[in-house]
Amino acid sequence: MPKNIPKDDQNIDLTLRPTSWDEYIGQEKIKGNLKVILEAAKNRGESSDHLLFSGPAGLGKTTLAYLVARETGGLVRTTSGPALEKTGDLAAILTNLSPGEILFIDEAHRINPMIEEVLYPAMEARKLHLVVGKGPSARTLSLDLPPFTLIAATTRENLLSTPLRSRFGATLRLGYYTTEDITKILNRSAKILNVKTTPEAMDLLARASRGTPRVANRLLRRARDFAEVHGEKVIDESAARRTLEMLEIDEAGLEPQDRKLLLTIIEKFNGGPVGINTLAAALAEERGVIEDIYEPFLMSLGFLQRSSAGRIVLPAAYRHLKVKKGDELL
Image (cartoon, rainbow, N blue to C red):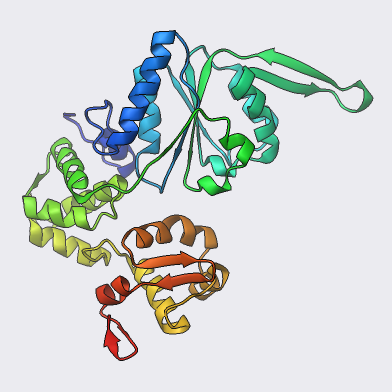
């Protein structure tokens, strides 16, 4: 347990990040698959197959990449799809990789198609093909790359091109965590932060955490702030509940924008179906934000359905919001 806790949230996130398989709570099937893949590669004396992690933000994709590196004894070079603007950006990274090193690319669905063309031979044959010069005097230069593992993370697997997706040795899809697992994560974080809590408070925060460790840790930090400001030495159920009220988060984890999305469909479009572009315009929100952040969680709760005709609010959402459809409260 660290003695000195960083003051800023970003460094606290790093402090709370698991550093071993035992500390990584949840996603048991994915951890089991990874251990098999890594152990087999180790026994053969090879680098692991390239890995693709997909799932909503905050579920631990980056943490898994660092745990894979720790297991294989390699270093991690981190970049993101939007950061790779030119083929030279990727070429510079690839040519500086050491044997056994891991290249982690976040937001892989935003990789430029021209960058992908450079990745294909690098992933398949460990070759880097560069075009030197222009016009008739241009020539192709082929460089050998050391054994490396590419780990990509994405929140929108459907936006990855088929050729890129097919070159990964394994695609591992992370799902939302159970309330039980989130509670365990919160208890671990509370110990690291030297925060005293009650089981009732942890249960309440876990249920409001959207099944997401990143959200859970954020709520715990805000509850800690609330308790400190009000001179309370323990985060109890009352402090946790008042923290959620302050943040306008209900016990199911719905935030103001979640409720606004559901109520917009109910009130303006009679519960749906409504097309995503129409919904985005009505909410004054980016389509990608709705699809990446709000919809996956609402669908996991059974509050929202995607259909070929558009988005539909389901009966469970009416009951949660205490809204009537017609003359009846569903």
